[in-house]
Amino acid sequence: MAAYQPLTPAVFHVLLALAEGDKHGYAIMKSVEEHTGGTLRMGAGTLYGTLQRLTDAGWVLEVTPPQALSVRDEKRRFYRLTTDGRQALGAEVKRLEDLVRLARRSRGVPKAARH
Amino acid sequence: MRHAYETLLRLYPEAFRRRYGTEMSLDFAEGWAEARAVGPVATVVFASRVAGDLVVSLLREWTRGFRVAIAAATAGVTLLLWGVALRPWAWQGDLRIGPPPQAQNAPPVTEAELLVLATAVLIPILVVLVCASRLVKRREVPRRRI
Picture 1: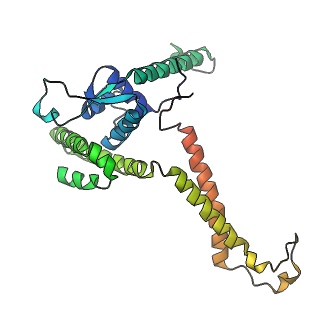
Picture 2 (picture 1 turned 180 degrees about the vertical axis):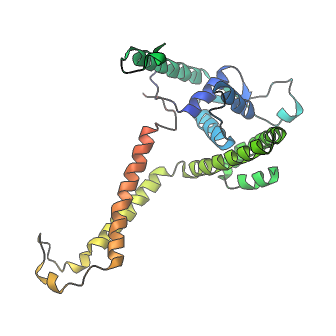
Picture 3 (picture 1 turned 135 degrees about the vertical axis):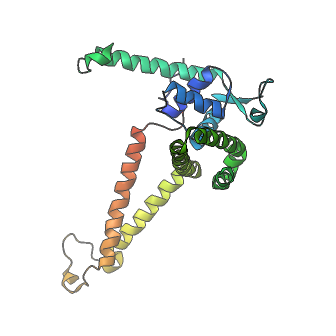
C-alpha cells in the first residue's frame, strides 16, 4: 500500500461518511455530525471545498443519483469513494491505530485512557 | 433568508460557485428549516455557524492556487521596506562598519522611517508564524507520497 500523508479531520470524516455508501453533500454533513456526536459540524463551504479537493485528487467521484429519490434530492449531486480514496482511508485508520497502540504502551498516558 | 445566502454565495470564485452553488443553497435551506423547527436559539447558532464557515471558506477558496504568489509578494514588500529603512541613498559610498564620518551631520531618523523599519521586521516574523502554524495543522490537501 502506498504511504499517505496524515489527513485533516474534515477529509477523514468525509471519506468515512462516504465509506458507508454514496451520499449527497447534506447527507455527508449529517453523517459527520452523527459520527462525532455533534462535536464536528461542517459548514457547506468547508464541505464542498473538501469535496472539490478530493475529487481533484481522484479519491471521490460524482455519480448519477440513484433512481428512487425524493423530489428535493433530484437537484443534488451524489459522491462516491473511489478505490484510491478507500485505500487512503484505510491507511489513515492504520496510522491512527498505530498511534493509539503506541500511546497505550506509554507510561505517561493516564490509565483510564489506555483501555 | 435563502436569497440572502445566495447573494453571499456570489462572493465565491465563479468556478466554485458554478460547481457547488446550487447544492450549497439547497443545504442552507434544509439546515435553516431544521434550525427554525427547533427554536430561536438553534436558528441563531445555525446562522452564526454559517457566517463563520462563509468567512473561512471564502478566504480558502480565493487564496487557493495563489499562496505561492502571496508569499512571493510578501517577500518582495519586505525587501522593499528593508531597502527604504536602510536608506542606501544616505550612505554616500561609505560602507564601513561603525558610524560614518558624516554621521554627526546626518539627519536624525524620522518616525516614518522607524515605522517602516518596524513593519519590515514584523512582516517576516508574521509570515514565519503563519507558516509554522500551518505546518502544525498539517496539510490541507491530501497528497500521496511517492
